[in-house]
Length: 242
Image (tube, rainbow, N blue to C red; front, side):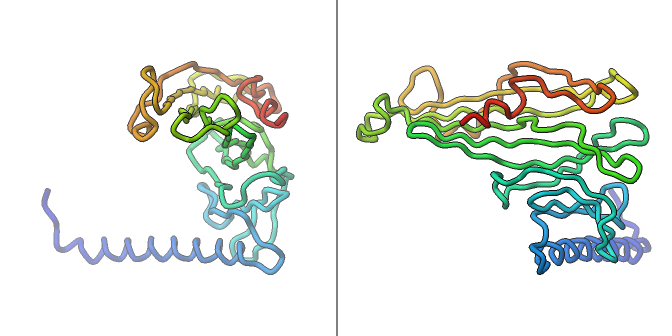
């Protein structure tokens, strides 16, 4: 690879301009999060329009004008029990139609009892439909982490007699070739990996992060004209019964 010295100033100018834009975007989002009215839990420029920002508060998802900070459209979201710092705006290229690109909100819930601790990341998907935000996927459980004490009597035995374990479920999302009502099908691919200390059948938990997820199943979600229905087992219905 050769480097054309004549191009250096132009390349450097482009990098400086890009860095400046990213810094301004970051500053605006920080300003919104630190606002006196309680601010935002998460903020990110829209991937298709840098003059607008996606802003998440404890009760709503908003599209906000970057300069005036005026709310252009808004929809409700229930994040009362979610971990505030874990709320993420997902701007992966979910291009469901030639004109509709979705964005996601990922948020975590945690559940604990005497023997088991569970953390779940949920995903909602939204599109901008005219002058309002439309929720098209609600409560898809994207990731699950379950920690088990491995103690049969509720964790009262000495730690050396327990066999703690960890179970991780990861669900990735891809758009498939099929279409319903003009919208691309969403393919959910599920993988799982497990560990248990002191077990001959499972790997020690210290090396679990190095293990690949074992493919379990694929589920296809189709648009019904209003939303993508999330089937039982992939939604948060079971989680909310804790």
